[in-house]
Image 1 (cartoon, rainbow, N blue to C red):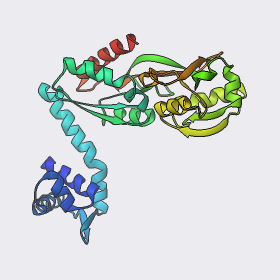
Image 2: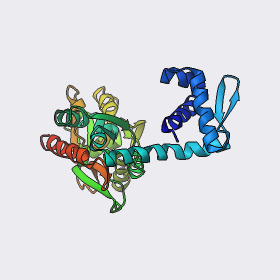
Image 3: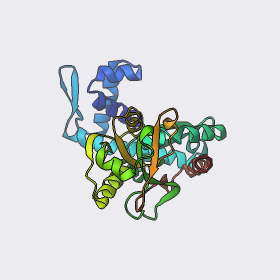
Image 4: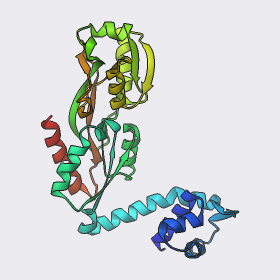
Length: 291
């Protein structure tokens, strides 16, 4: 089977149009139609239906969509496993937003000095989604939070740091009691679907604090900017935060810290790109140790 035809099929399904797929591939719609006809002939079934200018997968087409991505990834891994050049030519990384806005640029800058010709593709998502994608082999590694369970032996974890919770408040309130701020001032909540947000919520419940919630969002830089503008206080992980520079935000420690966000890199032990991943891990260690 010509694997490029599978890629064409997935692109047509994703765009819903042969013309749009042809435009993206810089070939003619007739060439797209020819590839799909050959694919249907080889598989012995119809894969797409037409409705005006749009196309949609048939039932068989939906089943192919479910499997084609995994097939193409496995073929890519097979090529990389037997070809050192292929294994060293690209790296697919995942990262949570906190990492993208803090340590990621420095890690990538250091990595590129060692491997200047490697193409790095970066996906942003929450930690649970990144873990699943590494487990499925869709990502080579991810900079994220440790899952709230024991990792299987097939996975590797390199912890970079632990981040306690802190109260973020406008600098003018920096001398006030942290608990009083959480009880009395408008509260900017770190999203409860995220690991750090869950920890913050658990801490508030344990302390018996019911804050006056004003906003809830998933971006720590955005939270810091809202705090800087005097719109409230927040309880969030004390991340590496270059985006706090220039903002008038006080970070206040809390007593009794049972919650710490474990931040690091996760990857599959048997990855065909282990050499590149370990190089990334080494650069990440150096970057974090300098902070």
